[in-house]
Length: 376
Image: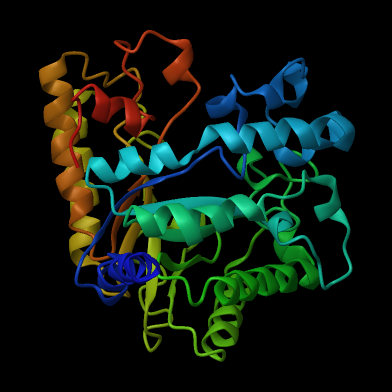
């Protein structure tokens, strides 16, 4: 019996999809585990973590939420949230649809330390790391899914938005203090080293959507330092770099880190912001072709579309099922032309449970797949 179990474990390892994605043989076709280890109210509003929390705090992110709840209340609530928001059954369902990659958002507090001497990480609910371990070392191995760990919330906040858990809402201090940047390097190295030998571990997304007061020079130096320190350990995992949020185009970063192997350029391509005035016809004939053109002329490292969706504005509702499916398939095919592949934002939202399932929620890939409105 022991031999059989060992044989089965070796079979999992030898046949896992992750090495083929890392090598470029197979593209990522995946989804984000949004709202799990970094919370946002708009997508997790039904969770126990928000019960009785004044609306004033809904846009603050996890720092503001835990500052309000305190550890006596917040720790238990977050434990329950993490247990329930993403489970092994979710990974089983993802794999059944052909999803081969998950991108999981984490915050700087997950490491449980700050070598630069800061204490902000202590505000947050502890023990998130055990769920990341469970995903990478267990669920993703058994169900043949690769895991990209994304630094979504850096110390001091890299963009001031709620998903980066800013200590002051709307303010970004990450690039203004060297100790913040150093903390993020330490975090990236910690994650890469912790999961270096895990077969399901694809790599680390080095920073999510930098903007606000983040400047390009500091950002590039951070990436180079993190890449260098991770590679110095002999780790060849995928590392994604992203330009400033408003510079996701072929004119920026196309010559950055070209000598580095297994470095992907990450873009987030939504047909919402900047497309508010487009109707359905314009989205189909101007918006999507415009994204395709950017992908076609890109000359840098392999492109990875870390976030995208088929959500649109009310000006382009794609109200009929036929038009919606046609639009979704066309945009999926466009995004799939990225050499590194993609991860949809996101797997689920609270709207899946609080609304009639027949009401379309384009942010929830789970709902789209279950209802047959979208295919991988």
